[in-house]
Length: 195
Ligand SMILES: [Zn+2]
Image (tube, rainbow, N blue to C red; front, top):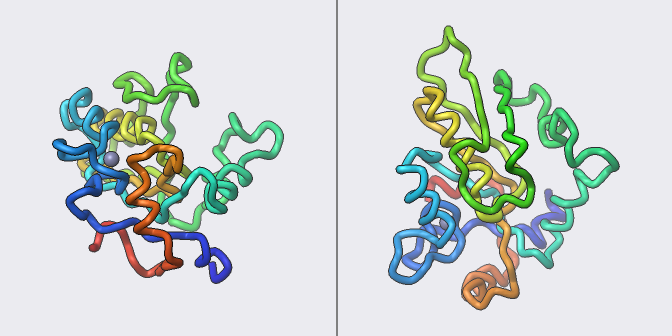
């Protein structure tokens, strides 16, 4: 963690120009960034209750490189379980839920899809509040499609934690954000949700 402090950056608080969902740059005149706005519209609001990125992940940065590298061993892209599930194992002390993925959607899908995932919650459980973990949030469409499936299946709330909120440095809109996170500043005790 100490060596990673040099390149990890805490998500910015919900400033007027920051998307309150994913902490990307908000689209002027809208409440969210463009993808999050689209998720709101197409899902009817059935989305994650909270999204907590651990750090920003500019495409040219070290965090992005790590997040690609950890699952780049042969065969791991489609591996079951997912490499992140392998890393976490039973450390959280929570049961894993299985989500079936619609083969019509995959890594190239960049928009919210109501039929991307199918999940079944344990029948004997009430007040199920799943935690969705993913390595990278690019548009958030995959995580939000899963949140939609979980809520449609009866989940009472859904939280999403992502290791890296992807940033495209080539987008002009990303410049103020990159400028704001220029200086090294990463505090692992700071949670995006609590500020
Ligand atoms: Zn957003």
